[in-house]
Image (cartoon, rainbow, N blue to C red; front, side):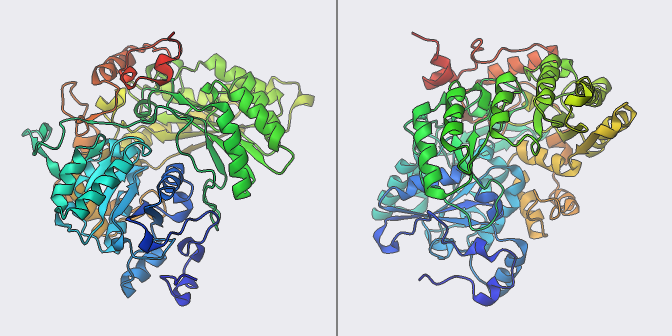
Length: 621
C-alpha cells in the first residue's frame, strides 16, 4: 500500500480529505522505475472542479496508454490544507504516487479560465518550483500550459516554460520524444526549449521579445532566436471519430461539479456568436461518428457505474445525428437507472420532445440563452435567435409541462442602450405571459422566470476583441436599470433577477486581454493573499487593486479603451485559422447590426478551411 503524503492527523483536520489520497476507480498507477517520462497533470482549482474537466480525463488516458509515460494528477489544495503545507513545509504532491510534483519531468497546467491565475502560482510555490521560468534548472519540471486561456498566454508568460496552443491529442508525443532525446544527449534546458519551439503549436515565451510604444501599446513582438517561429499555429484533431477518448474515465470519491459520464459528440460551433471565444478558437466543427459514440456510451457507463451521461459540445442541437444518438441512449439506458443530460440545446420542438423523454418534468427547469434583451442587440452579437423563436419555444415547453424557465443574458455588450437593458425585463415578462395564455386547467402550478445577467468581457480572437469594456460602476448601473424594470412588470412576482459580481468581471477583462506587464500584478496579488479568485468567498478585490497600484499598471488601459483596428495585440503571434481580416469584418457587421449566416447555411470565409476538414468541406463533392 502506498504511503500517503499527509499524515492521518492532517487528513482528519481538513475538509474533504478524500480529495488528496488518490485511489479512485480507474486510476492508473505505474511503476516509477519502468517509465521514461513522468508527467504531472494539474488543474489549478479545487478537486471538485478539476475532476469535472473533460480535457484532463482525455490527456490522462492518452498519456497512460503510452508504456513509457506515467501521468499523475494534482489539484490546488484548498485554503485549509494550503496553510498546513506551508507551515509544515510539505511539498505539493500528486494523487497517484503521492510523490512531490518537483520530481516530475513535466508539470502540465490546464488554463480553463483567467481567474485561476493566482492558483497557478500557488501550485508552483507549494511545489518548490521557481515562479519565473528564467530561474529554473533541470532540477525543476518543464512547466507547460494549455487550454482556452493559452490563446492569450502573455499575462502569465513569465511563469511558464512553454504553452501548447491547440488540442492536446496532436503533438504532445513529439514534445515528449524531444525531451527524452535532449536529456539523453546531455542538452541544456535552453537547448531543449529551442528544440521544443520548432514543434508546431509550442510557444516558448523566453524566445520572444516585446517592445512597446510610449502609449503602452505593443510596438513589436518577435522571436529572438532562429528556432522560434514568428507565428505559432494552433493544433487540431481533424478526425474526431478515431481520436483518443477515455473508455474508463476516473470516478471521484467525493461529490464534484459534473459527477457524470461525459460523451463529447463534436468540437466547434457553426453559429458564430461574436462574443464567444470558444466558437471561434475551436473552429471548424468536427463531428464524431454516431456508432462510435454509442459504443463509447456503453463502455463508459459499464466501467464507471455512473448514473448519468451528458452529451458535450458547444451546441448539441447542431450535431446532425443527435436524434439517432438520443433515441439509442433512451432505449438502451432509460429505465436502468441512467439519466441522459442534454446541455447546449436550442429550444425547438425536437429538443423539447427529447427533453420530455429524458427528464423528470416536475423537477427540471428549461434554460434559454437569448444573451440580449432586444432583437436589435441579438443581431449585433449574431445570436441567430429571434424573439418569435424564443416565445414559441417557451409556449411549447409550457404546454409540455414545464413551469420554470432560466434565461441567460449579458450586460455591457457593444452598442447597448437603455432599451436593450430594459428589454431583458420585457422579454421575461412576455415569457411569463405566454404561460398564462395556456388554459388554467392545463397549467402546472405557477410559472417562474429567472433571468440572470453576466457582464460582458471582450475576449481575444473574437470580433469584439477591439471593444471597450464597462467599468464596475457602469456594470452595476446597468444591473440597476434591469432590476428596476423587472419590478415594474405586471407579473413581477413570477420574475426573479440575478446578476454577476462586477469587480470580478473587470479583473477578468484585464487578464483576458492583458500583456506581459500584467504578470507583475498577478504575482504581487498572489504574494499578498489573492487565491481562489473565481470563488466569491475567497475573492479579495482590494488586494488586486493595491497590486495594480504598486506595480504602476493602469487597469483602464486594458478594459475601457477601445482598440484601433491596426493595433498589435499580445496574442497576434498565434494563428487560430480564423483570420484577423474576418474578425474585422465581423466587428463592422456588429456595428451595422448585420447578421452573418451560420457555417452550414453559407461559408463566410473565416479562414479555417486551411485545416482541410470539418464543416468547411461537408458540402463538397
